[in-house]
Structures are given as structure tokens and as C-alpha cells.
Image (cartoon, rainbow, N blue to C red; front, top):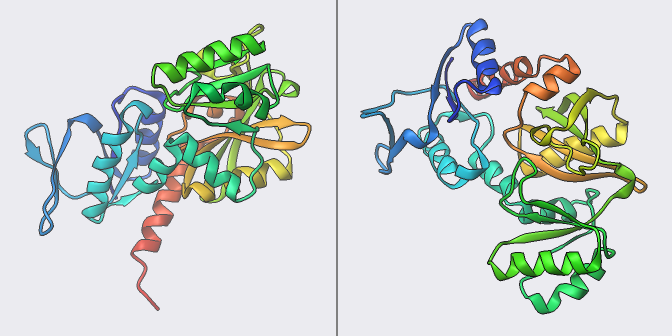
Length: 298
């Protein structure tokens, strides 16, 4: 196959691993800077241009779209889809998962375990919002945040009121969530590919830190997940419509709780911790998806 990888960071571990594995399996691969792609949106002949010329046809596209460029990145991916290029994850699924509020509402509708989560617009509603999620301590999250940025633990009622009011008054969209004390600064990242958890790791926050993200200095180790956690991760990815996803789960007294479903999960931490060839599983699935697409109708 001729494969395009949409990525702004060709030297990034995840991008390099996907290129390495795909080429080892005999595929032609090109890494395209998402923001350098520009589009001719025409009903009779849609096309994508890149660095001064029109791109040729690709059999498949692997989107590695950062959260900060979701709008433009999904527009580029839609253009590939309009040109009948098979996408590893669809533009609709990526947009759905990147909208944290919409994602939480969809997961809730389907009965997935979640931390109690509140959302409000007016500062007048802050006291009841805090009460609704069980009071302090609580967690405030920017809807547009990623890698632990824009996530604040508020230890007291007064701190919670001040932080929430400040975010609202500066026109930031936030979620307010209960603090799961028994998680003890750890979460589980499950890598789901084609409806199966192919690798999992436990991420532990540094002492004095509650965010377990590896970008925030957290550590990772292999973990054996429970059947309930496995089923929760698979179902969460399915609800988002993602064929490849990183599902972040907290272990709580009432069972697994989903924090987030990531459409472009990093591979370095989970491959190192689990010893699994996650990039290989992704390319294998892309090959399977392509074979299904070209299989003649019976």
C-alpha cells in the first residue's frame, strides 16, 4: 500500500515506529506535515496540495493529529476521505473524541462508568456545581487541554470556587469532576486496536502530583487489567467510533471509570512498559481494513 501519515513531528517516536513497521512490511510511506496540506474543495475533483504541488493518490492515511490543530487536521483528513483514501480513524470519530464534553455525554448515554462530572456557564451556579460533584477536593479540566495541561486539583471549597470562577470569567470551557482519592495518583492506559486491548500500562504520578501523564513526569509499568476494565476500554473506543484508541481508566471503589478516549495515543510509553509491538498491531489492522475494503461483494 501507499500510506500517508499526517504528523507535524516526523522524528516523534510514534511516527517513526509506524514508518519503520510499515516499510518493513513492504509498504510505501510518506510523512506529511498536516498544516502544510492545503485543499481544492471541488465536487468533481477534490484534491490536496502539498509544498507547491498536487499530492498523488494514497491507499490509506494514518492521522496523528495533535489536539491543538484538531479543526484543521480533521478538515485535511476529510479531504482524504472525499478522495476515497481509507483512514485508520475517521475524521468524525476524531472530532467526536476530541470534544471532551461531547465524548463524556456519549459515554454516559451508553452506561460507561465515569467520574461525576459537571459543566456550567454562569459563575452564579458555581456553589451548586461544586456540591453536585461531591465537594472539594475536586478536579477542574480545560476542555481544550491535553497531556495534563489545564488540569487543576482544588483541595478546598474556596480554592475550587476561585479557580472555577476565574476560568468561567475568562471564557474558558471547563469540566468539573469528582476527585477519585482511591486511585492514588494512578491511571491505566489501554491501547485498543480493532476492538481488542493489545497493550496496557499503569501510569503513576510523581510524589506530590496527581496527574499521571508521562509528559508530567509520571512513570509507567506493565499491568494485568481485569475483564471489566478490558470490556470498558473496548466499549469506550467503539462508542467513539475509533478503530485505534488510547483509553484512560481510573480504578475506583465502584469499578473502572473512563477519564478520556484518545484518538492519537502515543506509543513510546506503552510499548516500553508492556513490551508489545503496538505499532505492528496498528499496521496489521490497516492491512486488514484495506483487504476488507477491496474484497468483492458476494
